[in-house]
Length: 106
Image (cartoon, rainbow, N blue to C red; front, side, top):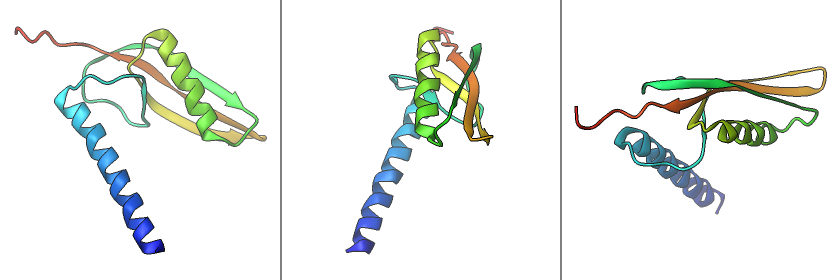
């Protein structure tokens, strides 16, 4: 039973990863802001820094706030996200960017 559940979870994680990679490679339209600790291979415009601090050791709260800040700037991604904790606070920051659309006529 536990093995079956672990296999099902692994399969669902694999499919969600494949679909997100397909979206990046195929250029499919995505909705919302994507958070990543990495850089992007596509050209982008830097919109600014987003950061948040919370007294809870809850990375989801950090991610939600980074997403909210990036959306208000019109960003497609937050790249280079870093997390650290200090004196009971959890910090997160990254760079909000907007993809540069390439003209398909050229």
